[in-house]
Length: 222
Picture 1 (cartoon, rainbow, N blue to C red):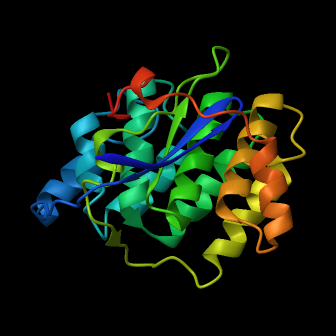
Picture 2 (cartoon, one colour):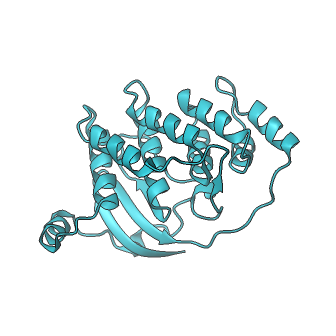
């Protein structure tokens, strides 16, 4: 993996990376049924089960959408959910992640992780590392770092998916939570680069100096 660009947007570091996708074995229908059973909300979620669901076109979307509706409190499970949702592209997962990001009763960590998942639908090379000491870390799990090629669910992402995602980020730029606001602003800025070179230069001037790459781990999944 190599860094293509580094942008600091408080309270997160947004990194762009290039990775090579690795094909994985397609799970059987029985394996998908079992994975869905062990990924139900309200119980101890199995991380291998969530990762299996990322390649289940039929059972995966409703199971992952249900987890977004009642997000796990365990950080590792939340990371796995984000990773699986990034790989499995389905309208139901998109809608559930949008609601999770907008729901004020969800924790800041859940909402940020949902935003990052949505943003990576638009830019699959986007990797985000949370550095704010006051918020949960939504760092990407191995399944989300580009090592798994995307899989289309039974209900593919709608044609207006980009508009729906950007609309969520615009709404969250006015959220009462300052961490949510800053994250939404940073993601929105990265995903909608201005065409006006004068505006582009002004935005670049407003971005803090990049953190030296030798001070960061080169593997955001660790």
